Length: 145
Length: 145
DNA sequence: ACAAGTTAGTTGTATAATACAATTACATAG
DNA sequence: CTATGTAATTGTATTATACAACTAACTTGT
Picture 1 (cartoon, each protein chain N blue to C red):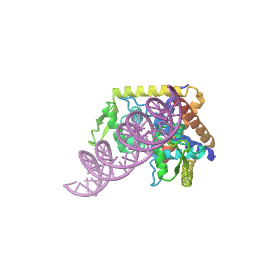
Picture 2 (picture 1 turned 45 degrees about the vertical axis):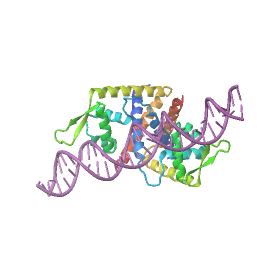
Picture 3 (picture 1 turned 135 degrees about the vertical axis):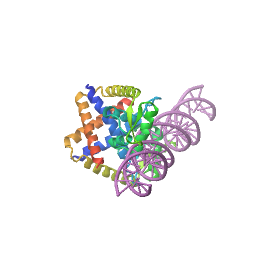
Picture 4 (picture 1 turned 135 degrees about the horizontal axis):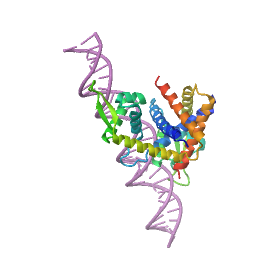
């Protein structure tokens, strides 16, 4: 393993993290935030789930997810379906409004990313996507042990 | 451009951003933070600079860099070299202690990343590093216009 | 069947990293 | 020398996170 690539990966990840952080501040009123959208996406693709399950899925603290869920509920993007077997628990289900929001958001992000990567070759896009995925996978597997 | 890869890139970037965010919470007392280390790295590799120049370099708000600089100074990792021609300005120079800190930090990060990527092929590491770099470059070029 | 322990979720508090707006102290151009 | 511009700081706000204390509800072991 050539140390140089490790160093590149490290510093580029740091830079990327920062860029993604500041880029998040394109903030029109009424929009909801990146993390909340990941939650919306999750319950859309994987079905309704409770705070605990979502937190595990994302490897976040339960309190973090709880607040995100509350924010989504306040905006009407999810509702809480009480668990009939456990009165403490509920599962988050996406609403019509939430689906609309998620679609708009995805559309916009796709358009932005398409614009950003318009000069990239299809091969590079594909490779980047795959490597990001692999990296995330590696990260999540490691940190969960 | 296959939309699928765009979608993968988008969602994996979001996940990555979050992982990097939570990973930052391995926080021993006395350590300084990721962003501050980027600043240290910058003035080490590119030479002393003032807050404004650094903010431009990193495309951050000046106030952000100002606070990071203050934190680094408080820890003794940089000192402020007054600009003889302009009494408002100064340039940040790294101290001995700062260099030590930076080396330790890099060392530790390299070790962690090496451990994380121990099962990756050299080719994948190299490709990932290159694509990250390319992506960051694309991002910075675009947002500065 | 009930006390003890566990679990789902919330809320309080703290932190890092950022931005924007107001301010201060200095610099420069008419 | 006044008016305007500029480097940096400071106040305030936001997002995203964690940890700890808490509440309400569930489960277990005797």
